[in-house]
Length: 149
Image 1 (cartoon, rainbow, N blue to C red):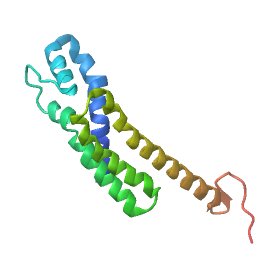
Image 2 (image 1 turned 180 degrees about the horizontal axis):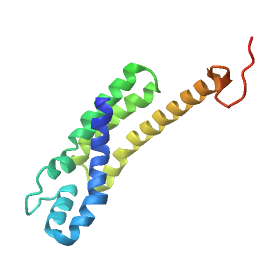
Image 3 (image 1 turned 180 degrees about the vertical axis):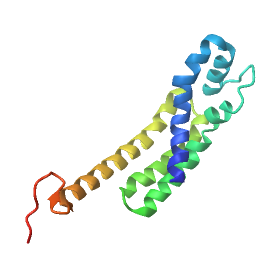
Image 4 (image 1 turned 90 degrees about the horizontal axis):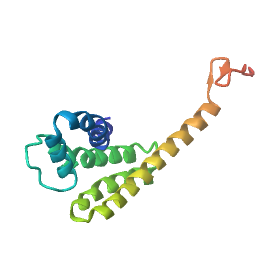
């Protein structure tokens, strides 16, 4: 649970700031928005952007949350284990993006995306088979009456 929350904050935190917060601030604080965008593009801000610099540049929550969440999923052995390993490895691999050109940085999102697709598919597959076999009282989940033996 902790890994999921930390990974979610790291994964969506930057996106939420970029989509919902910065456009609203662009009118009243254009200098601050330019500084945040400079930090996001590995530049040097002119002013102080505060904790946003840690969120955008470090990706600490994304990396640590990805590792913890991937290990927890692997140990639980409920979903696809290969996807859990790929999630952890993909989260750690993003550390290398600070040393690479911006064009190649986008490629490091592919392993995490494939891992999330694999985890989602294995969750859907497991849930689907459980619902087909389960019955609730005298009625199964499709609403038909189960035959008593």
